[in-house]
Length: 477
Image (cartoon, rainbow, N blue to C red; front, top):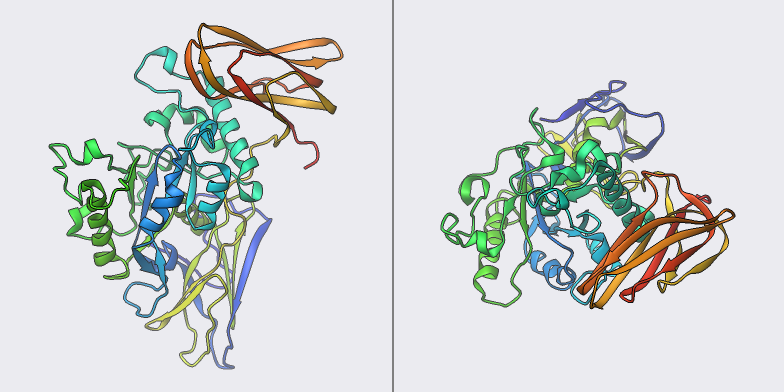
């Protein structure tokens, strides 16, 4: 399926196009007798038949140093299937980040690592604030409506504050497979357009009327699962068609793992190499070149953009426009009616190829990557030791995040309050320990309560509280 347009006719499916838009134009030399061409938006980037994504869970640091070059050994091209001479592009993936764990230790990716991954074409996915909830351990491990809303708001807000461009991810990996993280559309309201889990209920077909973007399925390739009695260490286990038949047209196929073994020659790494080599050899640069490999969220963003794109075709000019209220995306258009004699130049950051009587054009990204920070947008006004502090000027305090590290011999309380003209307003009274404790604690005020305007934070801190960030509503945006 594709989305088709002629001059002055715009197909808008499922979404309403806003009046504000980001647009991009491409021109060519049109002959005096040429008629106005027609254009259609392709299902996937580069006019590919299906899309492939890899997800690595829990934000490990080795993704930057090992996984990026490991996947980059395998390629597809930016040409339509069947068209030779395409530019080779590396396989890429996504890393699912537990926000409170980013940079917490030498094993966790820090914010510089995540920025480098994005620069390398990888994606960052939201994996909750602290990964603490699940649906099987009883009420204590399940989230209330207020906690669900707070987790979505704060994880997206902090990701937006820390990632390039101050934009948040549009993809999520459910922590512990707990889909209640999106209860009452909490994640969707904060900019998430696709959320995945093992055993998701959605078909892979992105055009299916049964597609469930917020419960998208994926293949589970952790070692104990991949080598069990059902999968029998088959390198193509749970891959559509088993590596023999092509995945169905319009499919998004996602492989998911916590670990790719870094030891050369290990059974796990060799299975991964066989799987990726098979995918490349059959459907990538070494085969039909029918697949587009991209981060999960980039695929979701493309499909969303393709459904609402405004396409205007004139003699010698094609304009693509996207509303400002959706994530930006590249778009691929198939254009019919351009003279075979016309000289065509590939756009910077894009690609252009002839395929029979048509021209296949891929634009650079139109609009901004990712999602806008949730509203109200936050800023960090203090980042330092977990001690009482005075602000340089009054601020509307939205909450506090704490870094915790150390041995706690007994249950130890801590307390947080905002210093106001009317006295201290307590917003968190909790305990930490006993035992060895490491992690990040969230003490929110908004979004479920109004921000507290004050002149400082008062901390009665347990010994393990090592660092504190104070977040306030950004009134200077």
